[in-house]
Figure 1 (spheres, helix red, strand yellow):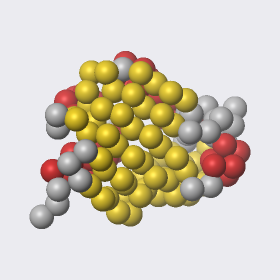
Figure 2: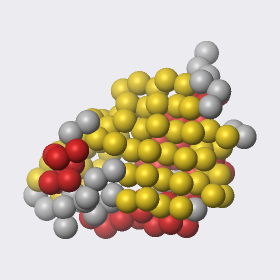
Figure 3: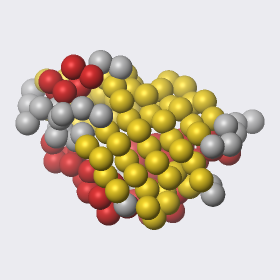
Figure 4: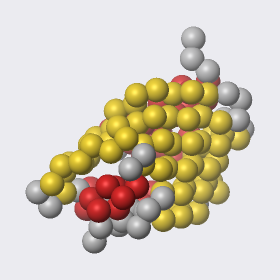
Length: 129
């Protein structure tokens, strides 16, 4: 049986893939903070749901295709680590980038999230403007 926080994160990835903003809204704290490392067009620090959802909206604007596959999820009562492979096509190039997501969970909701690719230089080159 998976930890409830692992289930929360898996539900979030499934909702993101389906474009289910209502579910994402329900599982995120109102004052969520999202930190995407790097210098590309989808990188930055985003505070609050509106800013986070705005950053999510950039992905289909910037990429011809985008998908994520969870490799592993590790969870305890306060944190979840998800190892994820993201594949995107953009401007005729395709990249598969291994990423680590770290979630801070508070009161059953995602409160703060950090996203970092294993190869930051490759991610920055792919997502550069």
